[in-house]
Amino acid sequence: MASEQKKALPFAANFAAGAIAGVSEILHSTHLVKTRMQLATGKSQHGLVGTFKSIVKEEGAGRLYRGLVPPLLLEAPKRAVKFAANDFWGRTYLELTGESKMTQQLSILTGCSAGATESFVVVPFELVKIKLQDKTSTYKGPMDVVKQVIRKEGLLGLYAGMESTFWRHLYWNGGYFGCIFQVRSLLPKAETQQATLLNNFISGSIGGFAGTLLNTPCVVKSRIQGATRVPGVKPKYNWTYPALVTIFREEGPGALYKGFVPKVLRLAPGGGVLLLVVEFTLGVFRKALGPPYI
Image 1 (cartoon, helix red, strand yellow):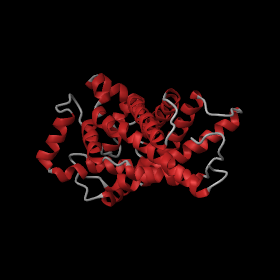
Image 2: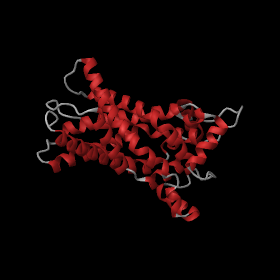
Image 3: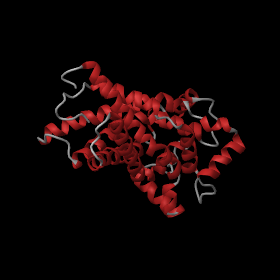
Image 4: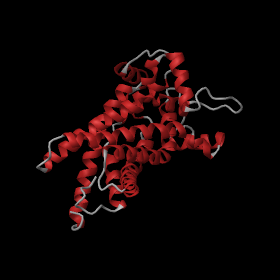
């Protein structure tokens, strides 16, 4: 993300900037609504507002923050890995291809690679969060989920849904970083710091919307991770693409986009906030480190 005249910042700087941005981006109550909508099978009875009202009425407002601990623990390392991996893969692909600067194709490839890398970090946290946010959940807390999953399914049970998580993050990050590159090229050149921040927010928000649009059929990930596994019984939802076909056939195409509205309300502006905070933080690091980083 740095211009070619400046020396690239160290990996640790990108990692730290991503971590700081991750903490600033948590908008959790819409995440619970999204998860509930995706776990509901059959025809949707409630939309965004209806699901929100139903949770508050039946379970209390505090339930909106059920499963808050895993996202809090996850966001900093998750976003740190996202931006550090994007920087790492960007440099790697530029070196491999001999290109002197980033291109549209490379930005998409770099984003996909960063998403694939990020997916390996997030799976256990996502599993715990979904188990806690399920309406029928009887778990006492995050550690109770971990203990019960390990006892019943072994350590690898924490990685249920790894394949679907891999595809979800690959598509989202490819769309996010690829779109950021394109939008930045179309926006007027920023002449002030305020204009730079605004450009970052706009391009990040559009990138967040594009990434969400591309990976929203990840409803299957919630189904896979929310299911209770019974020894000797083949799960109904196991692998991403066969599960998508099953949901499409049984519930219709609209079911693939359950939870889209709360998800895009969180991730579109969230994508803008992420990029704004990351770039601002990297700017602070550049000034602190001095030449040749500025």
